[in-house]
Image 1 (tube, one colour):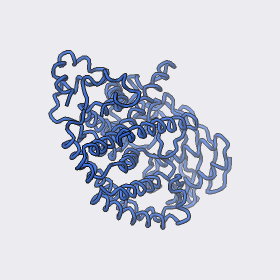
Image 2: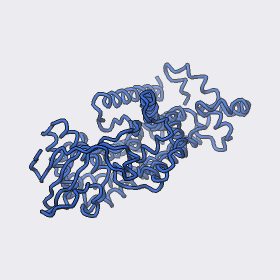
Image 3: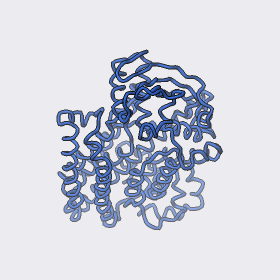
Image 4: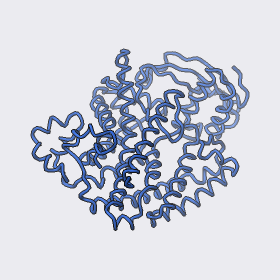
Length: 158
Length: 328
């Protein structure tokens, strides 16, 4: 077999394996094994958005009025609310809601170390929220909010 | 490369009546592919430089990492030791591979360095996808034959171009997978009576969803949310471009159009959703817009005649012209 035919055959086999592995992993585990991406990006259009958010209760003993959500506090945090911050909160929210407290403890430590590092002592609450995306973007707020837990550094107070 | 020549795919021969590349232009195509490979590694070096300039100092003092498997061992060195060592090694190898891309061991080194870099960048709780195309292209280019051999042998040029074409195919496969998910999930949501990919408000809904995720605004996001119907043709066009990207990879006359179309798609996601994929824009430029298989001055009617699903609308009037381009 010529070199290019041999290469083409190996490439095709690799592509089939890639597709099977990436899609199979995504369908089974709802996550991807790096770097085998399933490329399931923005395919589901959320009619009702279910996500998690963090309300800051107090910083260094000073309470914040109305417990504002973290995404509205860029100036206080000293950094933008990025997709990485959002993802860290979603991971923590899912684990707390599923009562997977060991995993949640690890996720919380990561979240505090990376995204609340600029603040001193912080007390914050984790919320599960439901909303209609366009209405919420226009300022109508949430249709449903439930407090899941309050964290004060490393002590969980459900 | 003709897709119908691949094992088990001879039934696709009919598709190729309007477009094929029979490698009779070895010299020109090979020279362009060889140049593009050099430029590819130059871009990789540029990317590394911008990342190091922006983040090297911050990463040395990073407080927490959730390492992906390629960098799971970084705790043994400590983050600072890992970053310093990998940065210095990567600078050396990337400069060397730009100068000497014909050395396979340097291309292997570039792949390993980039794999480690990219894995580290994604070890902060979320995997981004802006470098996957680069990572797999770097891996595929390991199999490029030496230019010295290729310059003396048509069969080695053929292998060189086949490897290059496989990078195009894999990169376009990523888009096709993304498009297939949108179509499948969209049909499911449509049957469930929900707003899905094909609904006139889909893009507005997705834009609002994304902007809420980041608590931010984008340049044109509010515009599309305010006038959702304007986003409908844009979203359908994006799904079309994505889904048929793999097919376009096998139709050289579509390479430039698909490259430009997907670049426009990435600019659109940035303007509407604030999602930045500038690395994919660069790779689309290298692999598709400047494709060595695209024949310069291909008539627009030939390109239109090769459009998936829509080509037949143009073929009847261009049959004679396309046939003159099919045997190049």
